[in-house]
Amino acid sequence: MKEMRFHGRGGQGAVMGAEMLAHAFVIEGKYAASIPSFGVERRGAPVTAFLRYDDKPIRATHQVYDPECVIILDPSFAQADVPLEGLKGDGILVVNTAKELEDFYADFNQINLAGMVDATGIALNEIGRPISNTCMLGAIAKATNWIQLDSVISSLEIYFQGEILRRNVSAARRGYEDIRLFPMMRA
Image 1 (cartoon, rainbow, N blue to C red):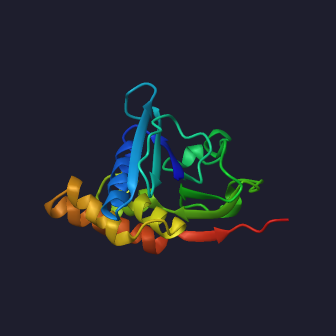
Image 2 (spheres, rainbow, N blue to C red):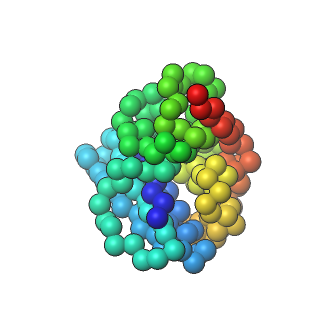
């Protein structure tokens, strides 16, 4: 079983992103479960969402404490310790940021691969709003190789239609194409 944890703020689409990604895994014939976690349910409040997928049914419905992948939708969380808490030693980090890798963590011991993409910039350009989740789904597909971009796009068709579907598909494709991947060197 693979586990992922999404960190964002209310209104950025972390919960919906985890749900759409779970549908993408199901489209590929996997079992998946997305679990939201809300504190104060308001726009701008910290939000965490969890996702598990496997080849067999998933019974666990609790938080993800030791993820293989952490997704950070809000760049302000990128320098905090909490998002990386429990990340496995061969973990993957995907961050929504226009900054360079050197501007973030001093210690990458928990990370095997870091992916950085300006998902907010892409969302503003493609969708017209700073909702970065669909762009991040494309970036996740590229960084992890756990899911095909076509499956992500098929899952978007469940949630959107018409022009907004076209814009979100374009954002997902750009996230896939524009992510900058940094394999971490181990000492």
